[in-house]
Length: 160
Image (tube, rainbow, N blue to C red; front, side, top):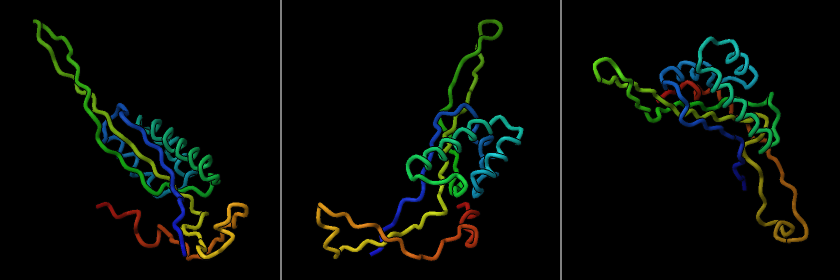
């Protein structure tokens, strides 16, 4: 029997003080790219939104190396999305006792990183008697499954 293996990790940044529209401008450039290429792009882009996104991508890679023991050269940004957060409202005092509203938008950014070197499925034999004994543990067998290429089917560019 085949069992699905976890190959993705994520990093989440909430209530970042920037507009979701301006963050999407940067996120659209890095979606579907490799980890090393993403870091180069974010360092060279002239937008203010690049630094918090850079920190999130770096954090997602650190999560992948700690949780899955994966190499950073095998990581790909499989999913990156921006959603609008709450709007912080303030009042600025103006002339003649009036006030003027100031609206500071926030956004939530999630970065999902996938390790392309790991197989997605592992073979599990439920009828193996060694698997059920507490003294001996059976080793996991990896199958030679066909690698699912995310660039060939256009899955990265489907924005629905």
